[in-house]
Length: 199
Image 1: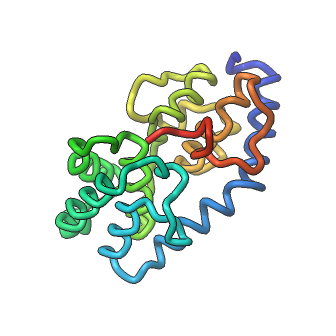
Image 2: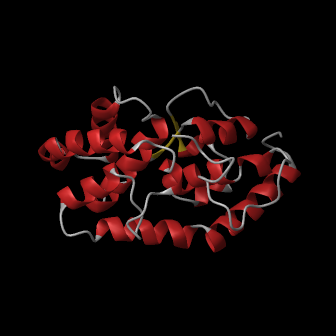
């Protein structure tokens, strides 16, 4: 796809409408749940164990081993004071990534999702779009530079700039097959389903 093509612009407008109607409410509800948890330690524990608002394992992390999540939980809780002192999402992301990088099986998606959930509790959200395996596929399908760790919102087509950075991350993952004509719009399958993002 070319960035200036009418087909791409129409596709992206359709994708944004689909995301807002079908996925934004789910994402918002989860982030509000994390925001409203009583304590930072509680948010860290739930995020480290990859819990959703039903206190069940989130689909993004359903394949991760319990022992790896428990090790991450202990490390993150031990560092809760440092987490409380971070000033922005980037600081949370760097701290979480540094703490869990040696835990086997916990990759880029785990670091991002855990950081986003903890950030929601602290009301600190990403200002750029962070890339991992699934979102890199989406960025590549759109002809963007997909090799780095993140992209500025300004790098995206204007249609996607109407979304928040963490919503663009969702879109890259959820709709990446649609961008290259391999699927219809995802209406009931999440990013963590069979062709979902990998932790």
